[in-house]
Length: 595
Image (tube, rainbow, N blue to C red; front, side, top):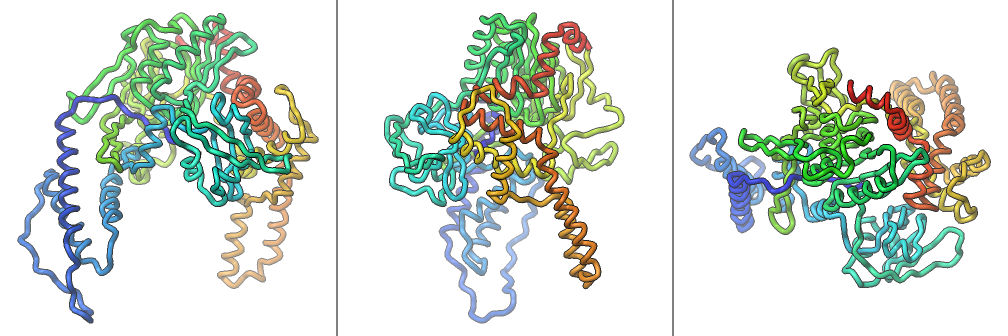
């Protein structure tokens, strides 16, 4: 279900780079044809010692000459294919070599096979042909997590929690979500029959659905808070993101909102041109939004805001960010901060300041390659150093020799190179994401809560509970509901290991290994009983979190995204509450904006 949203630039003129890629691929192709067509080398039977082949004339590779090294790659591949003691799958051999090349690059440069490439294209185009639902695999069957509003699945009455038993005549037992999605997708206008098992209904239900073009909306929700403030959520930067956002903000302005909360939390980015267009909604014309710098000085491209802003610079704005706000989202939030156009609230962003382009190598393979870094108007590159390598443990600070082990590098004092200034003179820092103007610490969960969320126990409970109980949108989770949920967890045999239990298991194994198991038996048993007692208390200690989570899941189940945003996000999220406070107190808002 998780879908990575990748960041790409528009076409940039770099003929020399294209030529290099094309020639490199051609050389690999020639090498593959060369060794695939070769026969296995005959070896004498019963030989137990290594056979030394005559050494060809030594040619020392010329440093920096890619053609020489490509020839070396061909020679190694040919020898493995022809002379290794067992058959080697040709595709696996070459693909392993290519992946080895990618290992020395940054984490975002990857070879993409057809399925990965199609998912990337789907995320950037924002549409596909199918039924329109999010699915997951639960207890060996495919379960509907949520139908998308306005899609065939939603219109026909498919509900969150429905278990899909069959797709046409094929059982879904044991199917992966990818296989199930493939069966349900197809050309617009064609039909598919789903056999559904629904909680509270004893017999199976059959639905015949007609496939359609499914639009993946970048703006899942926008609305007006009780205080008269506008709120809009942008989930990705796809082809139509700016168009959707522009329309949403126009409608909010027509309702005379006092200020705007623009939510970019967990927005992983997307298309560069959309980032520039989105920033243009808030910035005056011809303001620098971002520039990219490649390996050569001439590989610099600047992008400026375009046209008259929809939400002009005299209107108060707060942007919400978090640790999953990345790439294009960081361009927008960073540009807004650098131009002192609005306030950034939340936690430090992800720190992805690299530009990727996608090169289609052939019908089965594409290369997603980092070609430049991007810089926001103040000159900051917000790429975090530890996210520049596939092996961050190997990166060390050359100045203080501290190993980088965390997502944010902390030092006593920032170096001069890391200090920048906004247009109004406020101090901002480079070297690690966009730092908010006002920090809201991210919520932290204990072991019990993490396991509860990961195993989606609340969703399963919500499916059963809502089949038996009708709840209004403004319902509250009662103590009676909590007890029912506790009984449900016991019925489902929900269990997990606390850090204490994991540590005790290690102690028990160590005592057993040293032959001291009997000696420590009573002490370990007492500790285990104390750990069990502590574990039983964790439900009560997490009651408030459980209440919030149950309400979240039940609202989504009954009222979709609208219920979730209106009932949870706008009323309980700490970052939203702080944004409201700032927008309603213009004195505090201006004080922070002026530094």
